[in-house]
Structures are given as C-alpha cells and as structure tokens.
Image 1: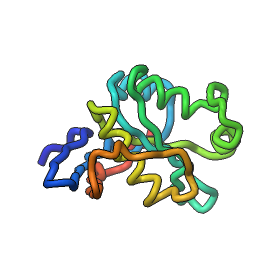
Image 2: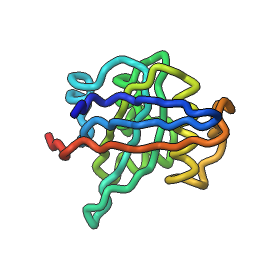
Image 3: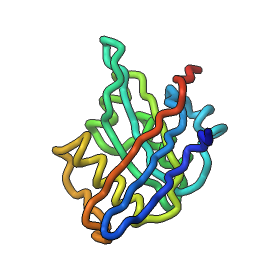
Length: 148
C-alpha cells in the first residue's frame, strides 16, 4: 500500500472525494522539520499534547508559495509565531505536526473548508472553492508516531 503523504482526488458529478494520506505525526523540532518536510505545496495540522498526554488539534493550514517546510517551521516555533494564542500554546505544550502534499490551491481550499467544518467549527473565514456541491474526505493516518 502506498503511504506517500499526498492527497488523491476523484470527481463524480458535482461531488468530490479526497483521500488524504497524512505523513507520520512528529514532535516538532526545527532540525527535523528542515530535514524531513518538503518545500512543496500542501496542507498541515498542528497539535499540542496536553498535560493528560492527549493530542489536541489547534491549527490547520496550507502552504502554497513558501512550501510546507517553511510554514510548519514558522508555525511550530513560539519565537516566530505571530498569533498570540498559538504562541502561548507553543510556549506551554509540546507541539506535534503532520502534513500532506496537495498541488492545487482550490483543492487545498476544499480540504481546509471540510476540516474546519468538521474539527474546528468555530473557525471563521475558511471557504470552499465553490466547484463542488459536496465534499467527502477519507483520512489515512501513517502507521505510527515518530518521536525525536
């Protein structure tokens, strides 16, 4: 089975079906990010591990021009993060991340819209591309967590 962290898409009529193959979930380390995350377009998720050792999703994003490596590097470093709430989380908890390559900006918009509606319903300002009537997403997790 192909475990490449990339998004696949099928269109049937006015519906779209995405399969998101996620990278392995990794604890944030600027050195590991620079070594292992590609400088290509894609989507990513950030989690913090709370004091009960549960991972909590706190941010989803996309990277188009700067590439995933740069975006994840900035978003997981409290000294570089400009959003005060995310900076506080990064100062308090360990951060974890995962990503998947996506070569279309419109597909990224559809995926982030779906994830925002599903996992972060209070998040505003996320809009679908408008190309499809319904969006379906199947997420495929990598098989294990890698710690550094």
